[in-house]
Image (cartoon, rainbow, N blue to C red):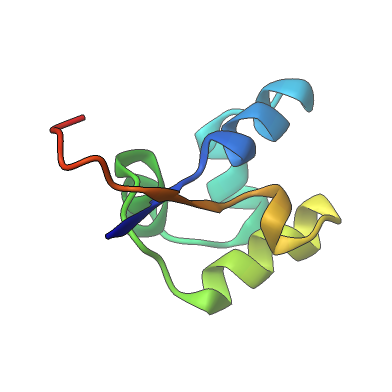
Amino acid sequence: MMTVSYKKLWKILIDKDMKKQDLKEEVGVSWGVVTKLSKGETVSMDALIKICKYLECDIGDVVELVADTGEEQ
């Protein structure tokens, strides 16, 4: 089983001195999307494309698939 990780996205935001609130406002995504990202849940491809366009990066720069070890995180 595979899960998603947005650690790369959070690193980019730290490097750009941005907060989740900034991401929400600048990209135009809902708090629901930001919450799902924070919890490592899947979000729509549309939301990821908006984020990538704003950050001027590729989708692989913000999300990655990781093997699920079966342990609770």
